[in-house]
Image 1 (cartoon, each protein chain N blue to C red):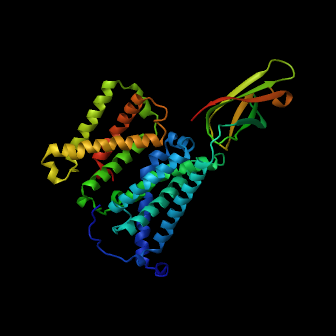
Image 2 (image 1 turned 180 degrees about the vertical axis):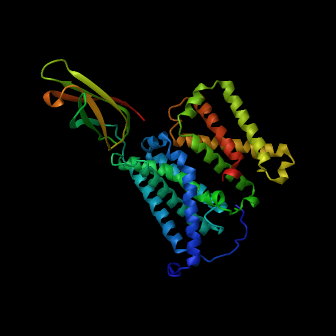
Amino acid sequence: MARKPAPAPKSPASRPWLEWVVAGLGLAVTVGVLIVLAVSALTPASPPVLTARAVSVTPVGAGFRVEVEVRNSGRQTAAAVEVEGVLTPPAGAPETATATLDYAPGGGVETLNLLFREDPHQGRLDLTVRGWSEP
Amino acid sequence: MTALLNLDPAAERAWAAGLGRAFGGALIFTFPLLMTMEMWAFGVSIPPARLIAFVLLTLPLLYGLSDYAGFDARRGWRNDVFNTLSALAVGFVTATAFLALFGLLGPEVSAGEALGRITLQAMPAAFGATLARRQLGAGKGAEDTAPYHGELFLMAAGALVLAFNVAPTEEVILIGYQMAGWQILLLALVSIGLLHLLVFTVGFAGQESAGDPGAALVRFTLVGYAIAIGVSLLVLWVFGRLDGQAPSMIVSTTAVLAFPAALGAAVARLLV
């Protein structure tokens, strides 16, 4: 690219101190990011392995809210993760609640909530990951 | 380094002003992307190897733009390298700060996801930082004397700027689905026609070719459209929009994105 003669040619020695700091930061961050990305690119990819577990039960207006933690111990990301909870009370018909996670990143933990009319403490709660799509 | 010992307050202040402008440029450049949902999702869905390729492709572009715009009027490869690195720092800081402010880097976001999100946003932010002096300051770059390959480089940069703002959205794919074959052909012709018209109006082609439309058509318009197509393919590939697509779908999606890319290439002088 053509360049005009610099209006005030400065020797590199007079470079502002601030510029050294900022440029150094840029170099460090960019190289760091590239290294981290390279390491994760070289780590063999494993398909998503999803597990759901109930973390807490909170009484809400018309029933109970169960906070569910979905852990993806695989390295690949799962999208549209559908989680189903079936609550079997001591008496009466089982109750089903479902929710969908947009993404469960590889090695990450996401949270979703299921709502039940009956108290999950009083029956058996089965949490299942029904399926997902590739992002 | 003796440079660290010689503090020149005036030079420090001047450079700090340029740095502030760079943050402004980075923000103005990236806020549409920071506020685009698809961009957050790409933080997880883009494979790391592709993200590396994206960063490595951005570096020479930033370096070239530093020569053209940059933080200040200094030129030369050493200054361009410093400019590029400083722009990257500004890009990463801007992307991280605003993603965090928008609540997109919360504790529920895994480290890998956060890194992907930040990196993807930091590159266009670094672009904006480099161009800030021309966008927000009164500084004049070297473009008036840019040779042919310099003009083509600017076209590619302009194409990338507009294409990158549209490419993450679902709409590019959807429009590709909606269009019939003849509409895609027409869109390509409209893109080329507009590119040619704008190259003339904006005076991109330079005085010597402006007198000869035929030469400008070949030298700038058609080459410019080819650049727009290339940039579109690249951006679509980075975003994984071409994965598993049939060739016909790749053609139509690329033609759709090449429309804003061609506009960007045509008005590169205004954009960058």
